[in-house]
Length: 409
Image 1: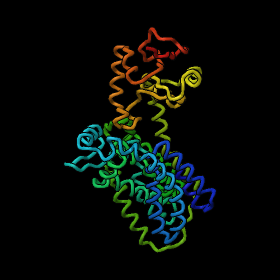
Image 2: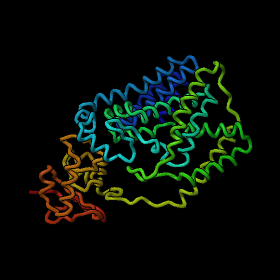
Image 3: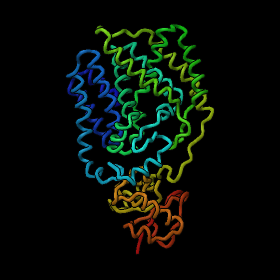
């Protein structure tokens, strides 16, 4: 939505479009500050390439970028005191060594320098691999906005991810946990659509057959590596380097190409059919091998529990529960929690997410209510699927799944 609104603002050039873009960017920055920055940076790359290739539009690009960036910068400044406390921001040697060990399968480390492994960019399967290979084809439509976004966005993401000096400093700023995710903000969908356009342009009515054959071949070769935080095999490194060096060559072609009108895009229906034919093997393979993810802890909180938390628990009171349930509680009620999944908590000394997780494990083994008392808890929520059971406390609410107790004493 942010990318779409950015281009709407470029076309509209009106205050309402800029205000809408700014509002959505501000909301994104408050929900996930790093991802708001990650969405912005490829658009900066687009603006640079488009300005250089089209020999103009600088003022329009600056206006749209300011509308996007201003609320993001404001949110970052507001959050800076917390960011400065996190151990992953400009980490010390011990924390950096821990992070490098945790993500070692996704990195290429040489001495004190490190960068993202090229296999990470194509890890999500055949469509991502095809998109990477198609990045250089943007040179065929260098006067189109989508081509500038593909070249500018892809080259910026690839440079930050694959150049050790850039990736190291970027990781210091946003944490290594987040910087490795920046690869996912390469404009894959635009590059893939551009590749389908190129196939339709040269293959004509045979484009769907060519796309289907390519989709089958790539799905058999690289169905995707969806191992979560670990990387088993990833995508082909060659596809990433084709995107990097081929994209750089395509940018040079676009820069030296004589200025002229934008190319007309024909056969849009044929392009769409080719895209569908390519992803059809992905859909068939995906649904044929579909497995439901194993849930750990909280499912959907019951309406009764949510109502009890909102009406019978004082605002900001500390509620003790298992990490997954606590994470849900914090979203549905104005309460404080004493433990949460460490991946969703700022790793500061006051928060101490890993220490709190260790206390939860100790409580889960023993059921010792002294542990939540020491953390200031006044209420306990028990998910019967997780436990442990609680005895001797006054019950405030109960249903088939959850119980809410007042922690006395």
